[in-house]
Image (cartoon, rainbow, N blue to C red; front, side, top):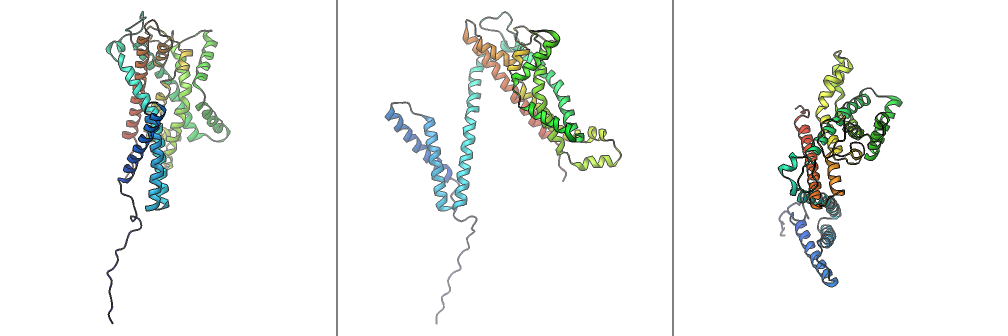
Length: 360
């Protein structure tokens, strides 16, 4: 009797068996876009319209989702097919949301570079009715108004957050939290109207001043500072508080010497982001700070120009030489974007370099 011994079969790993190659999603996407381009070309030829890149992208994206899901279902199974479908859907939504941002940045940069010269940064608009002039008075006004807004809002926001986290209990803490949430959603125009009404009670109708704009911006900054500081304080381990209190250190000194230094990086990051959030506000500053063509270094006296109001005024009220006004408006918008970008980069650097290092 002859016994046949068959060779042992090589075991397959169920986690790696039946997988598509890594290049398959990209090949499928390329094929889908080519088909989409062909369909868009046929539509354009039949209707006599121009070739549409948007139509190509939409058709290609839909074909890609269908194709990659079907192929993955046949080869990899239902779970992997669902994963690839959702991944493609989320990636498409991200790219769709990115289109307006990229378009905005490209448009502002392309139009703003026309007046990005030395004269624009070193002159004001005093006695300028056509070409020339600059934005120096608006840059100074923006920096001063934002600085005073931070001086007002940062102490109020930090001390409010400390009370809510370290001391707040009962109805008062709940009421403060509720009003902070309400302030987070108030329109900026309401903050400007409130500041104007407040200053009009003391200085009469028609009052315009930089400090009024700072008060309006502080109303928008305070909720952001409170929320960011509150979250950072909650991240401080209670063990640090308990260890300090166990050594007989008073609670206020524990907060000042232990809690705040531990959360300092996050607090500074939140404050920086709050400044970036309000520096481009136009409506409240247009109401209470007004606009002027002259330099003004005193926030407590007279009108004060800011960058967002400067861009708005140049665009909606052009003179005889309209293009010169439009160029200045786009250049001011570009400066605002650069300032906000720099503030966000500074916030990230602070969070990275000054955050407490975890022990090994």
